[in-house]
Image (cartoon, rainbow, N blue to C red):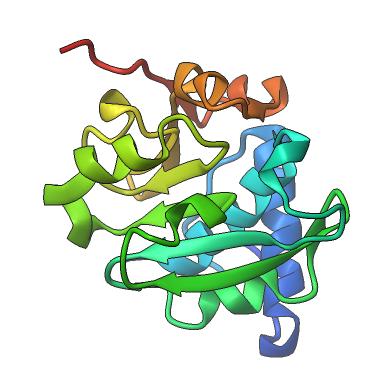
Length: 197
């Protein structure tokens, strides 16, 4: 699946253009699809959104080992981003913490992350994974149906070729993470709650 934009871009400036465009899209609530223009892949859009989510999130100080420790973005399961997420986050930082991507092979490293992207391949283990980080300051992101209702914090959904996202502010608050009201109030944000069992 691809998403089209009205602005033509050069390949060497794709990263800066995409980040800038998505910042404007987040600020203005504009759609991420259009009739003609540059073709941008689904995961280019999602990578830039992951970056923007870090800009709208505050972690407690105890989420980091040191004042200049990196913000670790872990990917658990099949990595559909390839090198895209690393390219988008390269050289970027949030509140003095440089952003770094780490591919995870097991659950032992989950508590060390500040952001955890859980791939669709982990659908059968979602409850276990979320239970592992539920009380920790880890921003959980996925693209799996029902993720927010299981206690995940941010979930990508595609509606009419436009990427939107569900946000579970209660889950974030429980973990000591503050998601900016600027993000929560965007037209593309759909608020959900953890389903009680």
